[in-house]
Amino acid sequence: MKSRRDELVDTALRLFYAQGFHATGIDKVLAEAGVAKMTLYKHFRSKDELILAALHRRDEQFRNWLMGEMERASADPRERLLAMFDALEEWFEGRAFKGMGFSGCVFINAAGEFADADHPAHRSSCEHKRLIVDYLAKLCADAGARDPHALAEQLALLKEGAIVTAQVRGIPDAAKTAKAMAQGIIDAALAA
Amino acid sequence: MKSRRDELVDTALRLFYAQGFHATGIDKVLAEAGVAKMTLYKHFRSKDELILAALHRRDEQFRNWLMGEMERASADPRERLLAMFDALEEWFEGRAFKGMGFSGCVFINAAGEFADADHPAHRSSCEHKRLIVDYLAKLCADAGARDPHALAEQLALLKEGAIVTAQVRGIPDAAKTAKAMAQGIIDAALAA
DNA sequence: GTATATACAGACAGGTCTGTCTATTATCAA
DNA sequence: TTGATAATAGACAGACCTGTCTGTATATAC
Image (cartoon, rainbow over the protein chains, first blue to last red):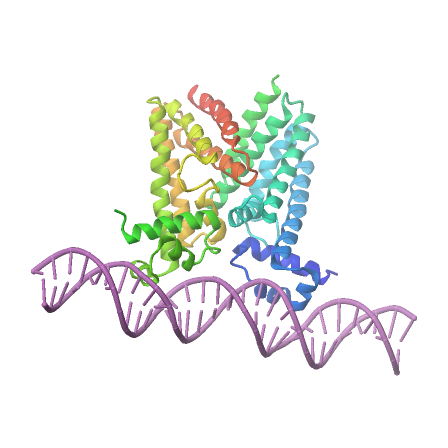
C-alpha cells in the first residue's frame, strides 16, 4: 500500500517528466494523485522540495533499472557495457517504464529549466550523471581498460548523445548508432 | 540600427536561453528590451510566436557561427569536421556568443519544455538539428566517407553528448572527449 | 501644416500560480 | 468511548501571467 507521500512523488515525477517543471502546477499534481493540498504541504515545504523528491525517486528508479538490465544481460563486463545501449533502446521505444512514455532524460530537462548550476535541481541532475559514470568506470576497470575513467566518460557521452538524438529528433535508433561507436571505443581501450 | 522587432527577438532569445521559456515572462522581455507591450503584440500574435521567432534567430546565428568556425579552421573536409569540436569547446567556455554565457543548447531545452513532438517549438528544434546533420553529411561526403550519412549521424551524436555533458555536469572538456572519439570514428569511416 | 504610421506608458481583465487557513471527516489506539 | 492523528474539501490572499485597451507622443511623408 503506497503512502500518500509516495503517491505524490510518483505523480509529480510523471507529470514533471511529461510536461516540464514550470508548466506543471501543484494543483494538477494534487488532482491526479487524489490528494489534498494540505497533505502536500505537510510532507513538503514547497514545490521545489517536491521537485527534488521527484528527482531523487527518478534517480533510484532509473539507475536500478539500468544496472538491472545491464547485469541481467551478461556476466562479462564488456558485454554489460554494451548492453547499456540495448537498454537505452528499450527506453527510447517506450517499453522501459510503464505509465511513462519516453520524453528524454528528466535530469537533462531539469538542467535546462534550472540553468543555474547552483540550483538544487541542477545539482541533483549533475549528481545523477556522476553516479552513472562511476558505475561505468567500475565496469570498465573490471573489463581491464587501460584508463577506466576515460573510457567511462566516453561511454557516458555516447549515452547522452543517444538520449538527445532520440528525444529531439525522434530517432530511437540513436541507441544503435551509439552502440556501434561504443564497440569501437571499447575495443580500442582494451587493446592495451 | 536594430528595429524594435529585432530588439525584441534578441532579448527574448537571451532570456529564454538563460532562464527557460516558461520561467521567462513577457514583461521581463519588454522591460529588458525597453519596448512597449503593444509593440510586441503588433509584431507577434502571442508569446508562442515570439518563442518561435527567437528559435529561428538562434538557428541562423548558431549555424552561421559553427559553419564559419569550421570553414575558417581548414579547407580540408576531415579537418573541418574535427574543428567542430574545437568550436564547441569555445562555446562551452563561454567565448562564442557575447552576452550569452553557455547554458546548454536552447533547442534541447525547448524540446524538454515542449515535450510534445508536434509542438512548433519542438519541431523547430528537430529541424535545427537536422540542418546540422545535413551540413555534416556534405562534409563527410567531401571527405570521401563510405557512408556519409551514417558518419554524420555519429558525429552529430557526439556533438549532442558533449553539449549535455558540458551543461549538466559542468565539464567543458567534454568537447575534447568527443573530439578524441571523432578522430577514431572518422578514420574508421574513411579507411574504405 | 497635416496626415499617417509607429511606438510609448500604463491601466485593466481574466486567469493561474503557490502557499495558508479553516472546518470537517475518517482511522485507529487505549 | 475518548482522544490523537492524518487526511479531506474548499476558500482565500497575494503574486504573476498573457493579452487587450485607451490615450499620448514622436517622426516621417506629402
